[in-house]
Image: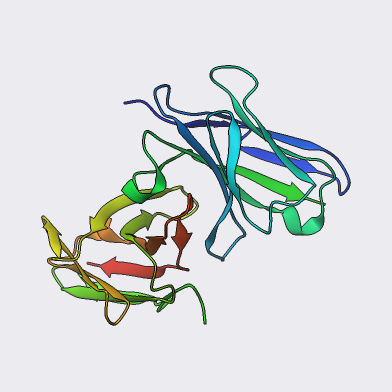
Length: 115
Length: 109
């Protein structure tokens, strides 16, 4: 069964360092997303990406964050200068259709720990 | 008021029990509604969509009341494998899903 894959599964970094989280969405999907979940809290929307551009972003997704789809398969989230409060599980998701169908397929997540 | 509000639980129920979860949402423009399931330290997975007329999938029944902005999930004949956190999720006319904090269910033998 096709799945969304994410790397790394866990990354530990020092405050102020740049981090890139990588995702390979399901191949025929058109919509791509990043969500995050701070430990013990709810899943929060960061950004959606369609047709090679950001379609929507949340207040969390400030200038320190960026996304890229550098080739036909990878979808990356970059945090330029990490802060302690960026520590969270970051989930990539993809969907063949828009959000109102609800069927988002999530990867297993990348746990980011900022020291 | 939170966008999507759920009782965090935990709900501790014996195998075979029936359990119901409730959820309220604040945005009356919300268009689509879902229940996702999240196992401990895992990714969310779609359990079922919720339709205005109510819908059933095996032991799971979902209901939507748009006037009250209220969504419910009923699980009949609980199994040990149903132990998880159940996430109420809504979507407006934007490209994002809004998640509730989740209701934790623990089914014991």
